[in-house]
Length: 276
Image (cartoon, rainbow, N blue to C red; front, top):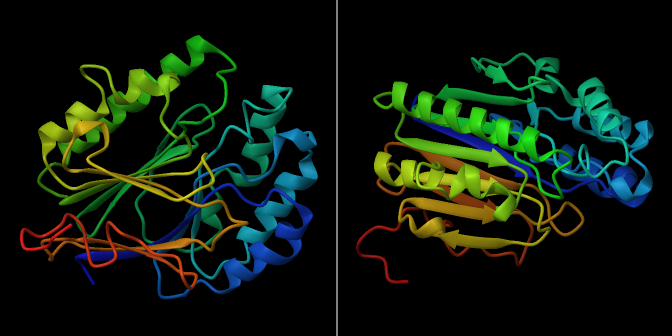
């Protein structure tokens, strides 16, 4: 309907042949075709194996089996952890750039970045950003600072320009925020203080750490919920349902038995009568 979206998110997979041949194809096949899209938050192979083209190709082929559109953003293992950064860029571009165009979808996507790897779209009063913010070590400090500044400018510009058209904003990016990303998230005019100023529920999903973690009030901002995803070897993609007609619009489910979600299984932000 016109007030909600449902999507899946995953990260840090496939790293091994077992994941490529068994785990990930099974996970992709089992996604509900009623969802709007899947996003892969990056690290589609293990750079320690040499960033071979066959690894990029295999991950791309698995994602193309999906019944729903797939968006892909880069991780450090896809780019800057490769011995040859330009080779990583070349392979990512060849196998994942504009991957969503393999499906017919109705998202009006704005793209930017050297590889057109970052994107944004507004759907049913939900504003989504997929950004090239990677973990690992910077291959170039000046390139990181320039890219972070451009991304921050774009995000703020869109969130400001469209402020009457969305009720919830979602950030999809690979990196677990560290000191290498403070210029984007934490500085005085960084994203966190801007999200606080805007005041709308803000969900940030990332990979990189390979283990589940929920950080409500991330960066000391009450309306900022940050979630770290399990890697693909540990768990299936999570399901995110956002319904802007609800007071607690964001619901997250971990699809495997016995994996709980504390923050958002009944909706987030918490309603006043809920007891933590």
